[in-house]
Amino acid sequence: MSEKRSINTGEAPQAIGPYSQAIKVHSMVFISGQIPLVPETMELVGDDLAKQTHQVFKNLRSVAKASGGDLNDIVKLTIYLTDLSAFSIVNEIMASYFVEPYPARATIEVSSLPKSASIEVDAILTLGLK
Image (cartoon, rainbow, N blue to C red; front, side, top):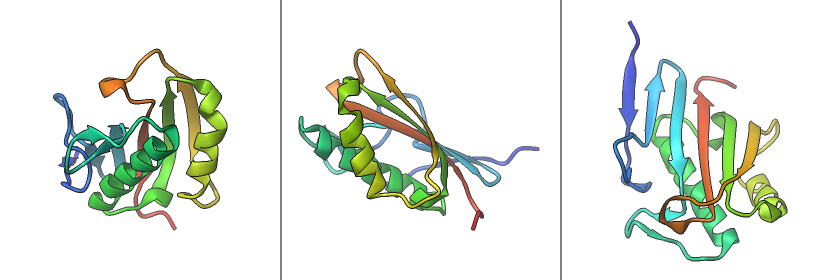
């Protein structure tokens, strides 16, 4: 029998739809897409892509922590950008939040994101790796 558990923290934005911030099944954690919402206000951090990217990684870190892990337990990221020309900005900022070996990753350009965000990132963690 599967041990499926919802992860929820006030340190990250609350879900804006019928989904969990994350789901933990055994040692795997599946974090829902995080957009650059400030948890306390549920408003976008601003229009600047760099600020939005930092906020997304802070939100991911908060959910990872609530699950019993941290960013370096992430094994897979999917990054959604409304403008793929921002790829290098996201790479630079991401490198400040992770250490090698970096997670596997896909980056996809999309036409729009919730609340008119410029970036959204979802993640898969594996707990207990060292």
